[in-house]
Length: 88
Image (cartoon, rainbow, N blue to C red; front, side, top):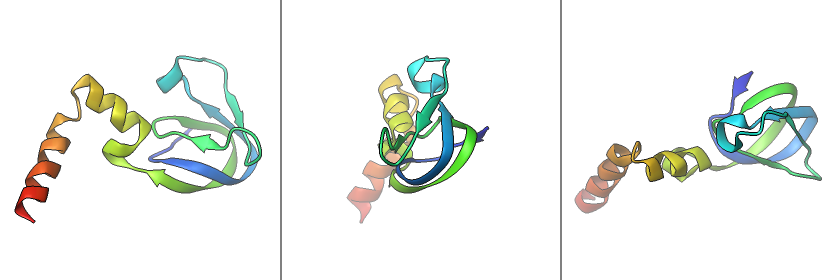
């Protein structure tokens, strides 16, 4: 049940099954492979197998970060980024 901390593309996997219910509501585990359905999303849990991925997005840019921002939960992080851009 490892939690994926970032979005990414699976480049190597061994019988990898992911619980995407936190994002999609689908209770069935999703089989992932580098050939078919290689996208791994933050906030999901690895239920079986193992794999390596190339990280494509983290934080507010990840799929779960986008959802939290839309729900208003990521507003503080967005404000901090705006302050950093203005100051630097």
